[in-house]
Image 1 (tube, one colour):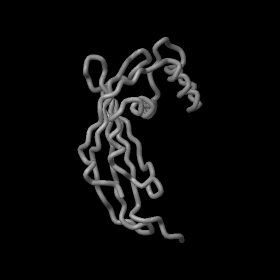
Image 2 (spheres, rainbow, N blue to C red):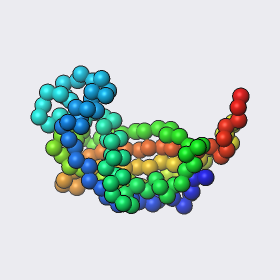
Image 3 (cartoon, one colour):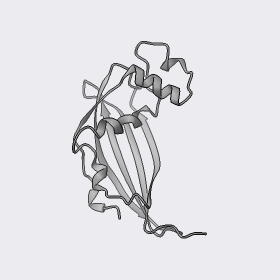
Image 4 (cartoon, helix red, strand yellow):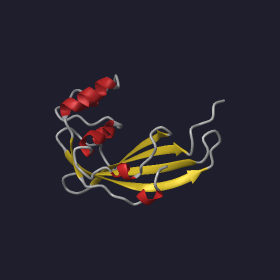
Length: 150
């Protein structure tokens, strides 16, 4: 069962380099032809590009506080992902510093799988000047027991 003691745990900061080729790969995977991703030397990121932060976060020991949540992967799922930008989206050539924390832990009554436990991980992204440029919110949910068939 997800541990409520994980609330407030913060991970170590980690670096995320915004790379032109990776933006192209991401846009291609989305089948996007929008010129903002293709025609400039320093293209902007697609709005959901920051989800690739997981690849950067896993390279730094202690960066991902989600491991302390201890959610059962047999009964857990990724429920929601949200991105907020506080100005223009980051561009290729920028290096962001990111830091994740467990921001919310709450429960709701469920039906087939019993009580539902929700955990929200927030990752803040800062530019080279220390300005917060974006925030990612990921919500995971775990059922109390395997859902009943029917």
